[in-house]
Length: 330
Ligand SMILES: [Zn+2]
Picture 1 (cartoon, rainbow, N blue to C red):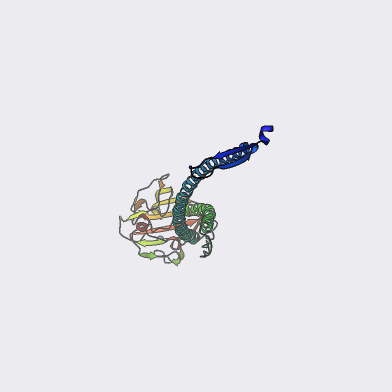
Picture 2: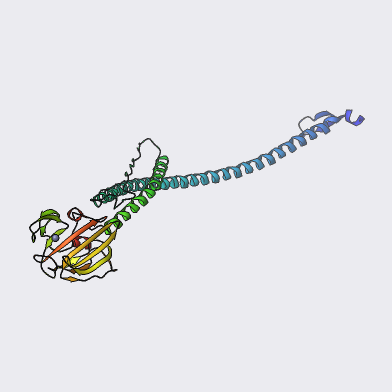
């Protein structure tokens, strides 16, 4: 320790013509000064190393950030494109929903018309006796379908969802209604098939109507139990409705005659035939040929005496005749 407190003298000898210089230093300075220099150097070196490391880390992070930003940008663009596509799809769906709604309204109107047809005509075929031809289920009230109120402000997805929800509800309502209409129309068709609604002959010339008249042979007033339709011997005579032949015989005063039972208490009878072309037990269809017009039995000339019998009572056939045989077949 004594050495550190000693003084050291350094002698600097310059060129020959200049004076010598002396520098005196304490011993501890010889250790302190180099130590401080070394410490500063180490700190500087550490700083340089740390700084260069940080710079490299920052550069890497910046690189990653750039890549991420670019990735996000691409992803965002992709999502924007996807949203545009979805919006276009949604627009198309909305337009489609509107078209379907229009069609639903049309279907509903059509159903209403069918119900009206079935309802009105089913009433028509029960002319003389409502009891003998019960209708069962008839037409029902049509559907009222409101178009949804669309506003520009409303959001497209909510609009579209609402439209499809309404469509779904309308379809749910329409289905049982259509089933009911179908059942009513089938019922109507069945009733029509067994209702004597067609002309039994091709000729439309009525030579005598149903009701009280002066008998053409006896001259006395009597009930004419049918409709006399003129024509030529051999003209075709048709079944006025589906049914089963219950009489096919030659008697007086009826001559050659056929009777058909159509069910529900309704029968038809065809008199004065030239030929009978159906036998007892035959199942005949509406419009089927069953005989030829003639002049057999108590008759003043070729004609068909056509009777409609409801629950055993003769009724006027005219109100039953609704259509031509040809029209039914076409
Ligand atoms: Zn007659």
